[in-house]
Length: 390
Image (cartoon, rainbow, N blue to C red; front, side):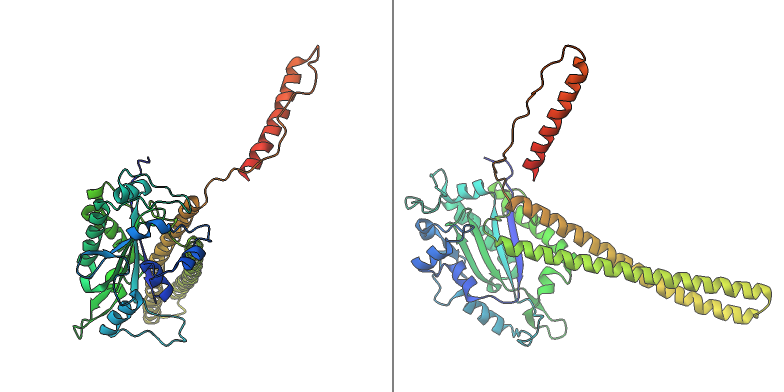
């Protein structure tokens, strides 16, 4: 059993929430649908463990999964309507965030232990786990996570809270509406920025606080270490291709922004240099007597004002460039981490001939002969290693 027992929390901004997503969270599937889902090699839905899934309702109590009469997407829309939320025009490419999609999990072995104790669980596809019963510890953990969400976002804004025990690792799906209060009207409304920050920099700070808070309030009670954005996450459950594409797209956007800021800074530096040269020329003209002192002072004041303005712009762009470079570095590191988790080592057959000495040992010059043979064997060995690496 691994000693790396991290908690996991993934949060994604939602501009909408589809019926298909709701059906998956609440397992509103028939036998045929489950079979089709399991045709995807990355999926593993165990029909014999589905009866162990559960959810926590608005009353804070445990209920069978999908017990509520209104489907999840309907309950979300009702909450949004109550808050007066309206999306932008349907043809708009930009839409506001209306919900947060959380996934809570943790170390594979530890979450299985919380869910099933010392019972034997087979994670093979089509395995029969009908003998399993759900342990109370997983329920206590889920309730603690639910309470943590309620404290942060309000009970009425936790629209759905489903616990899945039928996949590779037990985990929780929570659908939450971020709500804030308008300063002028004092009215509650959907406000992503209030709960998750106005930009990526603020979001990063908030996410860091969330991981710490979740560990202190919940994870530490169940032997789970503080997690971060990538490590310990139930990556098997996430849509891997979409997540990698998302990271790649964001990294490209950040890289483009970095190049744009660098270009703007070069332009500003060029302007500052140009005005500095003008100031030098004005000083020369004053010394040579071609302009009066009054005119020089006026020119100097104008030029220094322009230099100060461009210098302020340059400093602002430098700060933004530093933020974007940090963001790009974080996205790049995240992509590297995700690839390392998602791509298990595969054993490929490498065809090669074992290095052998084919020449006979000469009577004279054995030292040079040994040196030549060592070079030949080293060359063959290096070629084999390169094949394995590729």
